[in-house]
Image (cartoon, rainbow, N blue to C red; front, side, top):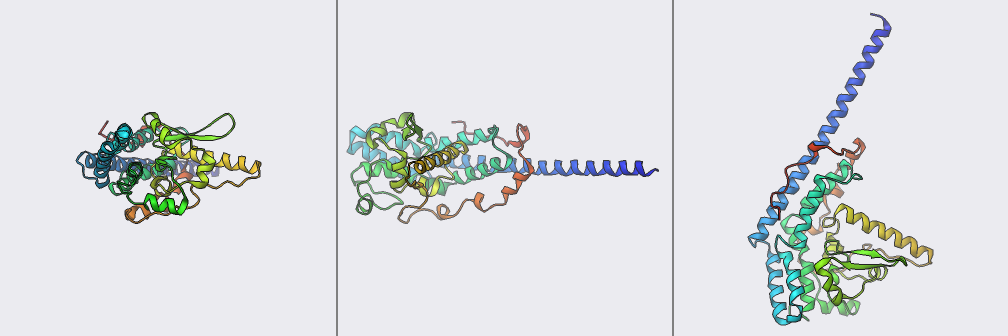
Amino acid sequence: MSNFRIWKLVSLLCVLSLMLGCESKEERIQQTITHTLQEASTAINTLGTALDKKQVRNANLLTEYGKVLSQQKPQLSEIAQIIAQDATSSGTLYQSLLTRYQSLKSPAPNMNSNDIINQAILLKEAASISLFNDALTDPINVLADMSDGKLARVGAVSQRAEQTANGETGVGNQLVGNANYGEWQTNANGTSFWMWYGMYRMLGDIVGDVEYGRWSKHRRYSYYSDYGRHRYTSYKSYKRQTDLAKRTRQSYQRQGKQFTSPYAKKKSVASGLSRSSYTPSAVTRSSYSRTSSYGSVRNSSSRTSRGVSRGK
């Protein structure tokens, strides 16, 4: 056999080996995506069942707060009942998890395999009963503040203690900045204001106008902003928040002003949250980032697992 034919054979074997190696890596990525999505699906279903069976402690408390506030202040009955819906599987907070899961089954073109895996992990964590129980402290505390002290805050310092330390606090501020209830919109002058979604718009009459730059510097404690944002924000909304902070910082710099990130420092909080809330997400501690070097895996039907079955 000539040296030329031997060289061609060796080259062919090398190419085949590389192709098999790449296929193996891609298969492993697909398996990881399928597995993490299935885990997220299971967690979401389990949480939904727990909510339906009234097995989530703060969900039951939120329902009770809604009833008490409606009786105490009938003029706030409508908004109280809207906020209290988060105690159920038809509420905004739970439905947002379902929406995020569905979006991961048909991910945006700019999401690579690593993004999909990380988002599935965050979604699984957000659907854990202990963390969801903590996330409900924000709507609970909105109702508590509306009650003028009749209802106690949960998982946070009292309204009076916060006012003593930081001055007057606006009612409903716990939900400002939370991508599940609204979004920041920038006007023609480049100034961004908080806009409530749909049925939450009536909160605007209570909270008033909230400008992003001022809110960033003076925001009060909320579970979402201090502990839950990474887990309870969609990939798209998180990117929007990041981009807004970047644009605002650049705008401030051009004006010779200093911009303070709303997430630069955690605000004070009382005890009462689960240990899970103080534990960093598995995404920040995992080695999944190495999958990004394998390239994105898009438009592949094998990436998704069986969907969440609740369909509410």
